[in-house]
Length: 281
Image (cartoon, rainbow, N blue to C red; front, side, top):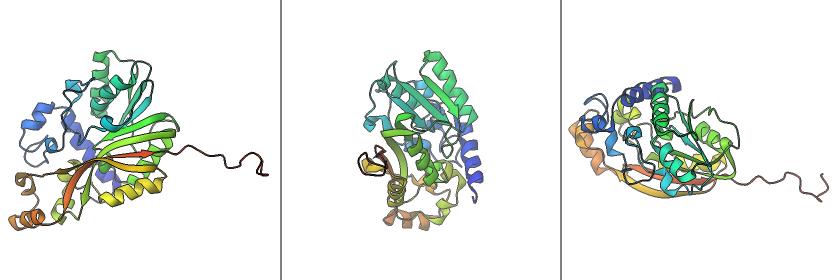
């Protein structure tokens, strides 16, 4: 894995495979979508079944949190979901924004977009739409969204600064985001970092927690807060595909951790560059 385009292709190929399977198929296979050579996506997933708007056909078990839980979404809001997959979070969000709100899902994988649109058509929703595009170049106008959400996706984006800059751009002044993602504390063993399967499975694409939060702050967001944090346990049967026994033992004994976090941030209200009465107007 060396270039951004190569990383994107890895992710796109893996998630295209997953899109063609059900959540149950992903969970019962020993390590995910394509057999024992791939990370188990279910170790990150949260239970959505009790949430209003939950649509089983849209739940592929790919998330690592429930970003709508803390997103402060109101009736009538326009919400953008980054990496919307088969539409799971979009349909939960639709229940929160109501008929007068708007939900826009963005995903770079053609198969995911097709599956999400099919699910929306079955539900008869006319205020949920799905657009194909990359998070680093969102197909959405500036100052469009009241809220941006995302679930275990930004860690897969090679250029995270650009991803958060685009998040900032599409949010209205005074808007906010609530994003669930995977981060690290301490350095992953080299065997994991270099594994394409683990990258597509959210682990090796993750960066250090403090670096992640610093990127958000440097983008211009205010009130950046970790709303929820949960340690992720990667089973030995997955680690053994990338590490020997000594490497696994060292990993377990180290202070290194893989965490699911949900992060909040505000886009500040814009201020006038020239205040009336200041002499410059």
